[in-house]
Image (cartoon, rainbow, N blue to C red; front, side):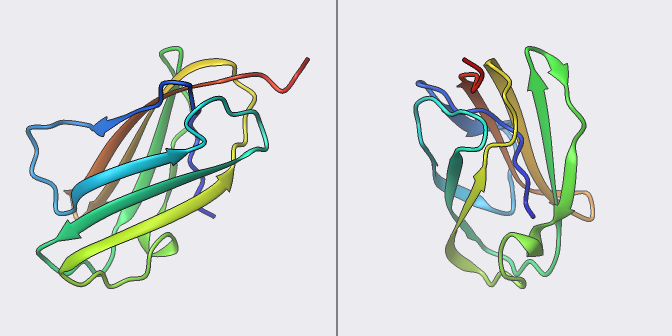
Length: 135
């Protein structure tokens, strides 16, 4: 299970982690649904359109969350659990849906990094906000 630990907001903000880097996956667009408020247990969908000039046979996904600046334990798994490997050169996309697991009201910043043998394949930063499911 690919577990993204992040929070969606009325003003969801998705960017490359470091615009100066040259990643192996060139991100053309990213969308997040819902793009407004999310509560614990609600389904969240991330869609990424990308291209790559080189074949990618394996890699690791590492998701790190900072809740109000405090780091939560990272989650790591094979990217081949998320998308079909090998990835051939060309244009691709993936969509991943998951139930939002936490009830952490407020703002969170999430870094999602894919890497293979210390080469960064992709890195996204998502800044989001959630509402509590406790009323």
